[in-house]
Image (cartoon, rainbow, N blue to C red; front, top):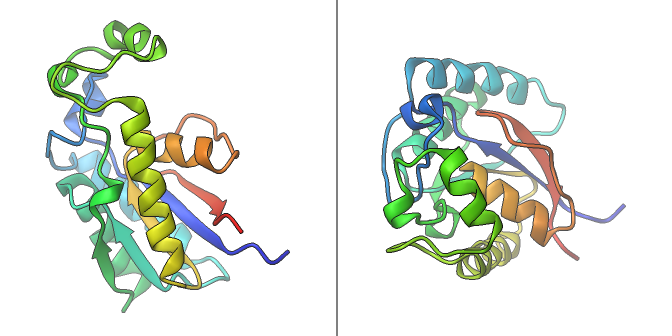
Length: 175
């Protein structure tokens, strides 16, 4: 096929996920115990893949770094790198608000007060994707938040179903 794959994994559950409230890249919270278990379960599945992951590239947020560390334990000596371009969209005043309350605003293309606009977010994730592709890793695993996965799907024309916590998706770098 000639296209080079990469994997994307959403971080495990956080308290904000459990409460169904917004948690942008400007909020740095840890995984819950359930989130740690979700990451361990996904890590076992990743370790069983026939293709070997050669690098884990995570957002520097606690929830994504911890997910990456859990996966690293299952994979062995795979290095972890952090990339600021994979940080979740900054949601400013919308952080901590209910998803139901803010979804109409997001659907309308509104920018959260004190946050990051959708196009700015897409551009940042796109630059990160280009940078990571240029590194030439055989099979990188990117670990980020739901919004990053959503934008990857948009940028690559590979819209994915909603990304549950610790769910893994396969994408291909653009040619």
